[in-house]
Amino acid sequence: MKVFIDTSAILAILNSDDHFHEPAKNEWIRIIESQDALFSSNYIIVETIALLQRRFGNEAVRIFITNFQPLVDLIWIDEKTHEAALSVVKTINQRDLSLVDCTSFEIMRQMDISHVFTFDSHFSEQGFSAIPKIG
Image 1 (cartoon, rainbow, N blue to C red):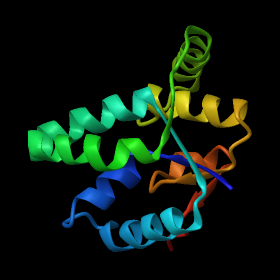
Image 2: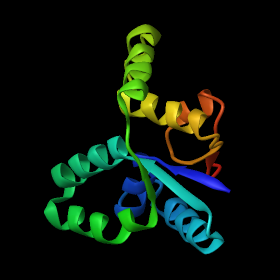
Image 3: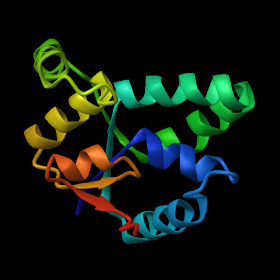
Image 4: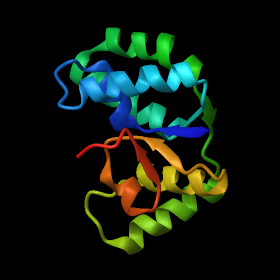
């Protein structure tokens, strides 16, 4: 199975105070043991590093880069994908739907990835299967 990894899942794994830390940690272990093909984007990496650095400092960034990033196939956002996502952001008029989310949706559709490791409800709203199932 192909699984896209979202920022919300990464942050939940790395932050023991996160409300979703335990389900995130358990799901991450399951995903790694299953040897699913893991994907994320350079936009997710940028977003994650910025949030980790601001919230937890450079040591958290180092841990992320060293331990997480090598396990994931990184997809680089090209101009066409960026412009398509930007168009969605401009037209959808939803304040909390980010450009990063929209690029993730575009990539997942392009690569026929239906499963996403996330705690962001926008992915389910777009028709993707969020794992783990919460609530």
